Length: 133
Image 1 (cartoon, rainbow, N blue to C red):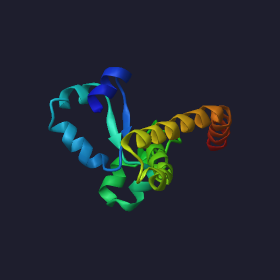
Image 2: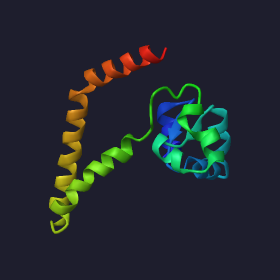
Image 3: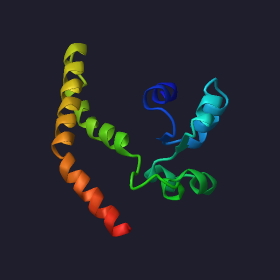
Image 4: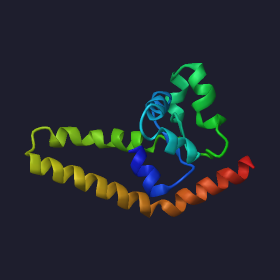
């Protein structure tokens, strides 16, 4: 995942992950270590997880203490998968084909809804940033 992100998105990535402190150790001991460090990239915990984690990790990996993290809480994927739990009752006894079809339809609709509301989201984020500044 990290290799693909570096290849596709380039340098200076901020990768939000539930256990980013462990992920950074894993990256540091992998073949990606030097590439990750020279790219100026780093990891951080998502804001929700960060509050339940130990203080040492929060002090260095929480988005609130990382300059440039902005207003992002890095919890989008967690919210998406939490919403997709609604599919469990529908897909539990479905065939493999129907299960995949339902999951695909759910995420396609989520994408459409997300893009439909993109203008409002950008406006809210812009207004919030102006208030903070």
